[in-house]
Image (cartoon, rainbow, N blue to C red):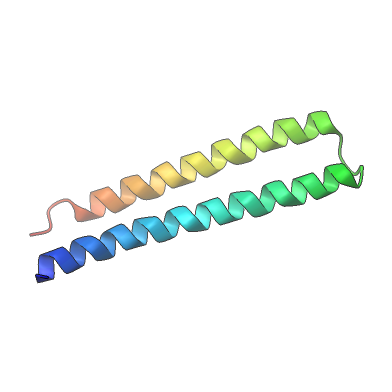
Length: 77
């Protein structure tokens, strides 16, 4: 492999790592919310509203990290 291919694959790994981190945090937040529903700490209707917000936030963060990763690769020889 050439040096350029090594850098490209390292950038792809960084994006994959960021995506895995965002997904893991979203899963943990949803699991915590589900536990609160089971324990009747929050209502099921409230869970639905928070779940939608958590998933939308995770998508926004994921798209932002992908955009930053792509922008950081522009202009590299």
